[in-house]
Image (cartoon, rainbow over all chains, first blue to last red; front, side, top):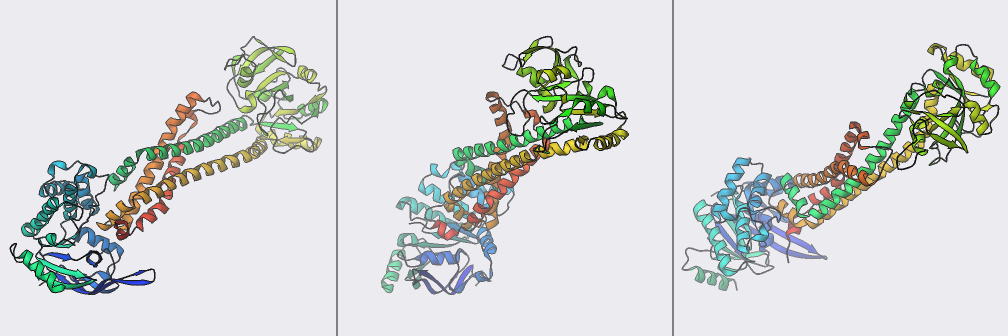
Length: 246
Length: 385
């Protein structure tokens, strides 16, 4: 089956004060269209580094990342930026909204960068804000929004150019449990209703339980993997996964 | 990116406003210096144009500079020699005259003409010096040995102060002697503005210059005779300097050359200060917004998009500041009297030059900060604790 994104023996090694740190160690990964994949692991496990490689924001030290059939190593800086703009969407732990733009403006900026026309942008902004439940907050600045609302706007921005892949780096890390659950339900809904492909990095197993497939990452490598078939056995499944790894 | 650039400036509106004001002040300095020199250039050209068809004869001292104003206060010609010059064939005697030139007040700066100066001339031959200048009030001829004709500047100098000036029929005092004002010239060049024209013989007695004049002005009956007259003067009296309109213009331009250089230097410094000011502000702005720039890069903005955003902000600051310079100057003039120039002297070519300067400054000053912004690595910028 065609994959949205895949890696082939990808490594990321950082040099820090003369010491080599292997953040990602020889990972082979493939994500299919419509999948919701969660990469779970403790802090320092390399999951964010892996996400950055998948999102064309960083270059692997060894191996390669493929977006469809396209090897990212063959792209120059401008082409990688264009890939991020038109085919990838990013959601960050700290939301990273532009403070000078309103909610609508933050969603709109991604489409402006892609060269979309005014009428198309306006319609799409309205649609997305309604989709994330913030249609009436369009003119509010980020500082006037709650954490959960900001993350929803960030998700709307990430979806602005109808990306093939949505990448979320600890999207609920700065949210309380209830608010975080709301955000995850939104993401889950995107997968179920719109067939959106999502890769989410998290340290929270509860967050991971929303995914179709969970990868356990530790010390830069994938240690375990499981599919979640339904809500009932999620806890037990994840518990088995964790126990098996240990 | 224009909307984002403008919003970025609005977010730091106090700093943006101060930057715009700084640009306005710098541009205003450039504007003032350029206009002053343009006004002087125009005045110079008026002077030169009024010299057509005449030969100006002086006897410069050995240590006299070639760039001294005409007439030179250090020039001295024997009156009898002057008489023979006036008899040269081809000279229109009615429009020619010997003149005695004596400064009445100190020059405001080295190389500048004194504000007031006495000019003794043969009565009835006033046109030799005045040329095409018209009288504004009174008469253009000296009635008697106690009459004077004043330039506008001299009329104000002898006035009551606060811009008031003496009028036709009133009396002024020169070296303790009273003279009646018979006429006041229309606004003219710097040379004529401070003029106190009086009878030559009276001037020779008043300033203790018996048998001596400063210069001789010969007007040719026909323009074709001009060079012949000049050659005859030089043949008869090789020690005298005979200059036509072109030579006088050359000498006066040389006199202004150092002023031009000074103005160019001041303008260059003003432009550089504006350039650096805008650049520093933009560098700080990029440093402060490193994270936002990283976000834009992360969501797919290319390096050139970032460069354009920074350039737009920089251009906005410099162009807005430049546009503000004109009204700001008008406001300042309400409180500070600048007698030399007015806002009307700022002609279109000046504004075009300043407009180009604004664009160059805005774009040029953005180069370094824009390059630095474009180098922002999204991962580094978004890294959080």
